Image (cartoon, rainbow, N blue to C red):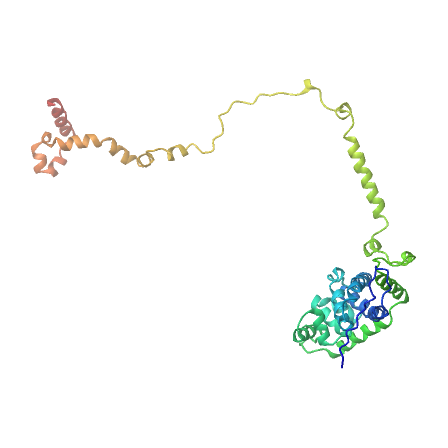
Amino acid sequence: MTQRTVTASSSNPGSGQKASPALAAFLRGVERRGAVLAELQCGDATAGDAALGEAMAQFCPMAGATGMDDWPRRFWGLLLSQPGLRTYTPVAIELDATDRLGRLGSGPRAALLLRLAAGLDEVAAAAVLGIQPASYRLALQSGLPHHADGRADLSAWQRLREQIHRRIKTLPPTRLERLARRREAALAGTSAPAAGAGKHAPMHPVAASRPRWVLPLLWGLLALCALAFAATFLPVSWRLSEAPAPDAVLRRELPEQPPASLYRSDAAAVTHRDFDLLADPAGMEAAEQLAFHAWLAARSDLLPADAARAPDEAVAAPADEAIGTLEGASDEL
């Protein structure tokens, strides 16, 4: 059995050659499935169709150098990598099982849609996501509907599958026309739909949701800003007509006051070099009498003779007698 390595060698959009029938047939075959997958992945049909058109335009140039067996993996990988599919727009009211896909993460939702919308098996879907089949199986199980007790909800899974298939088969004719124009533009190598299709092109979602009164309001604000800017160029006499005359300015001298200090008055005592002595008045007084006591201890011969033998009696002597003795000793000196 020979390996099929047929390539779309003649499909080189933009080079003047017509796209190969195989490439056109492939894009036509994945058009409906790709539109539904992109819509359910991002939650918005308009953004999904735009992402599908970009994926087709990026796929056509590389299809000529890629084997047809590898086309599905390349195409679905390009579609899921579009920036428009990275965010999800939630629905206002959930009515169908497909509306609950927003509760899933982007990865489990993509794994689920590759199986139900794209129709890929586990091996092919895992190759699109660049993971092992076992990892894809875990992602698929996390995206399956479950009961409150954790058991798989087979009825919800069946409803989800039926709704996705029904949506693929019943796309509106107007939407199919837009998708066909995007497909033909991708095959022709142009980024925009073919000429004459502009009147049927969908309006940008931001422009469609913008109220009509927003634009006049913006123009009014712009006019007010222009008037305010022009008012800055008016003559000075116009702007200062209500200013008071120079003679009317009142002058009053402030009373003299000492400069403010960063510290309180008691902070000077704390920073004094003899703060320890200032904080101990008794010690300060003893320090001042230190020279006298030292002299008195050195001249113990001036004390009465009985003071050394009977200290208790000397202490009990009258105060005037002790003072007289000290005065007599000072006279002898």
